[in-house]
Length: 215
Length: 414
Image (cartoon, rainbow over all chains, first blue to last red; front, side, top):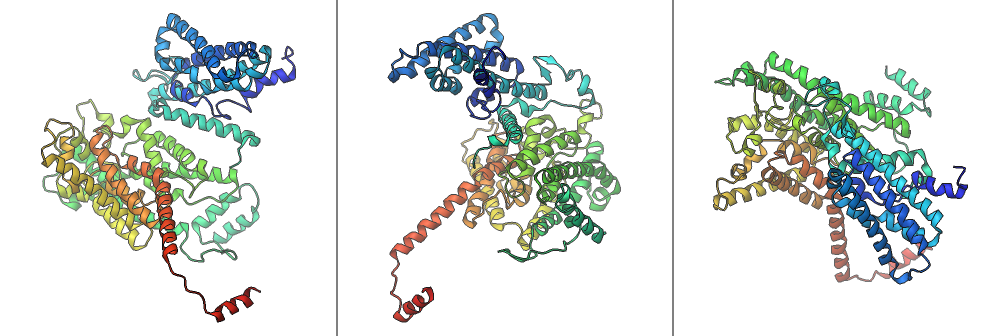
């Protein structure tokens, strides 16, 4: 991180830990619940959001002085919608199956509260370089949680990772399945994501007690 | 032994492991100390007595479940005995032995895992070990199928105790009944082991698909498929039917219920209103069938035409009403609230049974749902009470106090 000053580095590091958009700000929960049943979908979602947020923050930051403040939300929506459509088209062209799995949730990146929040709170008041770092940082913070949740849900729910059967074959009864192990169907359904996110929040707050909110 | 434990307790006072020793000591013996100060009710009626009473009420169900495990197992292989006699066919050592090898491990795993987690949390948090798990640990083996793999049970117990109870702050703070949380987790995580016609009889799953295949469909399971069942009413009442370990015998559950009501541990209001609720829903369904609104080919027909009062004899409805719905922590606290709370448990249980053949056992879902609503019910009962009293206060005529009294009051406050 010698490239960045300490202040800039914090823009990336903070959202990864003590100011995580999902576990601390509790934003972007809907997509975290919906698409994390598979690790692959989580990773693609994380990358999509990374792209939209990185580019979007820079664009908003560049035009921040010419946006009339009364219609700034509409301008932000147009920017984010344009970027999301690009992502959607790319996915449809190169990863059609995955785009079907993610279905409506790619489109719903437009309404992802994290993105609008960063546009409003950061890009409108900072230069493009810092806005870019902030966008990347928040998207990474979001992506990390998505990948962690996706990892546990796919591993415990389907016994696979990226579609590879890491625990053995449940039908041929090899690996762990030969000694009676079974996949946990509970991890496949969205409520499980809520509980996994809850456990991450719990672990994070008990490691750093300053994060615990006043009751 | 007692003195030694007490010495150990004193020795470890203030140390990290202190709660563990305290728990062991107070679990086995009456503690040497009593409450000295503060606004405490100084009665012998503590949490431990409550828990022990419930466990005593559960023991007959457990013993019956052990015998029934063997009875169902051998009957599925050899056919049901033609002229049933209690001592020749049911209370036999063979049957009991099957129970010992299948049900006892469930009890041991349930207590072992659950209490280990309780001890762990007590040591981490530095508070005393709470007795809350004593009842949960006994309930859990009674509401699962007899052949539930032990590792699944262990995972479910860990999940239920940590997520269902400890994250809320331990015994007395939980929103959901931990035993039902464990049951719900098992049901959604491993549905193949929790429903169907193979899991209710010992060895049913291993034998499936072989020449020795045995089937023990529950009454509700048969009804949900629209087929008939081979059990008489008295079988259902005494409990000689397949089902989860301890829930089959309505007779023993009834005895447990009377015992709990007599000792004033469980709320009779919840029990009565839950029974009424289930009867009402059953009557409505029967009425729909009698009125001819439902064509016979409908997939709900068999379950809907099931006589309304027999819902109480099959499945876990009676067990749930007596032992789970009456949980003082997760149920409604106000007397009026208890009526609503119980009524909806009965109503929803029968409704889920009939409308969702995928979940032939709706009782645990109904109770969990009402657990969530219990604080809301209480809130409105309390609000209603405040409103009524304010109204009475407004219309009341307040007579002026006699002058003597006013003077004496003045001197008092002066």
